[in-house]
Amino acid sequence: MVSKKTMSSLAFLVALLLACSSMSSAARYLEETKPEYPPHPAVPEIPKPELPPHPTVPEIPKPELPPHPTVPELPKPELPPHPTEPEHPKPELPPHPTLPELPKPELPPHPTVPEHPIPELPHPVPEVPKPELPHPAVPEVPKPELPPHPEVPELPKPETPHVPEVPKPELPPHPEVPELPKPEAPHVPEVPKHELPPLPEPELPKPESHYPVPEPKP
Image (cartoon, rainbow, N blue to C red; front, side, top):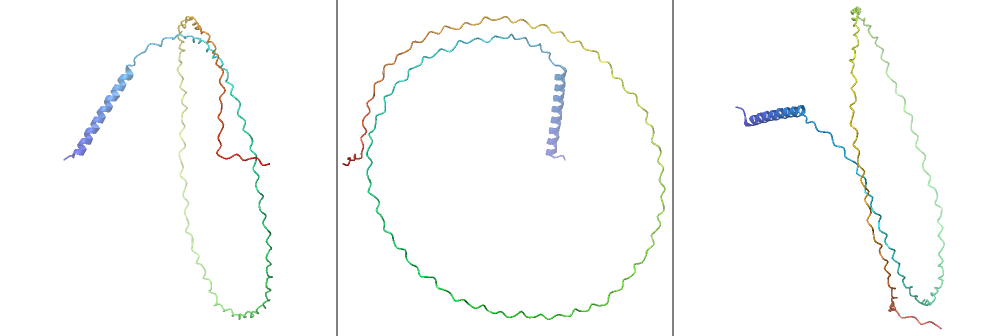
């Protein structure tokens, strides 16, 4: 019995094949029947309109500010001089004690090592002569004679066909674009200058200080 999975996979493959065949036939039909579009019409060039100049803005006079009030200079307070500290005498340190010289210890002499006698080696082993083996004679193999290479006949060069020259198509001349009249700039009326009234001088209040003003010394 065929399982359900194999049946569903087969059905999916058949649907894919049908879709591919229909798409290929539709693409071939579209390639065979290409619509011919008419050429684009020539668009006349429109001249750029000249814009009117920007209106001039009148200059506004800068207001004159009153001068800054002068602050009186306060006298500097006199500070008392710093107290002088007395010089402390340097303490005298006792001299360093002198250490006595210690005698150098005498080391014992190094012990003498006795000489060991060299052991005598045994007699040498005589060399065994190598047996001479005869080399087998290799018969000479004759070289096989190869047949000569066959001669390849020269092929004639193919002649290129003569391509006739295609005449260039004559294009119709471009249509003449009529000149459009230039637009006239609108008349801008002059703006009258406004005279500003003089600014009143502001009265600045005197700053109240929280600290007492020192009295000048005589």
